[in-house]
Image (cartoon, rainbow, N blue to C red; front, top):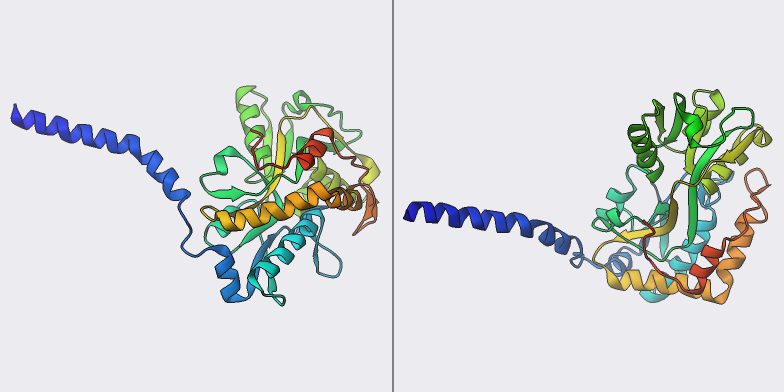
Length: 307
């Protein structure tokens, strides 16, 4: 009997440990970083910025090889704030190319100090990284040829559909395919450049991603007027910058900088520059007016996920 009680007691401890494990992991994820980011930047006299190569008009490389876009314009203001805080006016800015697949690991391991691309603030990602205040809200829709016959998601049944690997759209599309028995062939591109090539080649009838990024993709096609964005929005995507967990001082600096831009009206001016005026590389005007939701977010900045 004593042996049984001991076994039961051990089993009870094991069960308690199992129940406590998620809590311990969550606490560890949010523990203080080994070296605060501002100290790391100050010591190295350099800040590592994650950027995207073809995410027009947020983060991309222009014809002169420079990283540019709406996200980068905001990021540049944060960099200026970091220079002031660290007393490093000649702080080196080093750019690190990130993709949907590697962006979170590169932030986690410190290769990237601040990811300034087009990443959605998702609750599921909070155990891995910290997000800044939201600076844009998109919806997920479809880019297709005007004569494709595709007008909404049910029209994709039995068709080959394209999305980007490691994104919210990929998750939604694969779940839709499974739950609604649509028999779609889903292709996942590594980035928008590859996605555009696949779409223009005719290998897929439609491209599911964030509407504003689909507009950017359309602007880079050989004949933009041949393409149309359609479909009932499947999700709302709150774009924010990513930084390492457990670094409240750096998060506060980033959010304070972004909040000041939003409340001063400077963010609206940046928005107009990138969404309501011609932008490189083709001089296309997106004609993408600011939504009421985004205007409300700029009036009361926050870092909440929308999912």
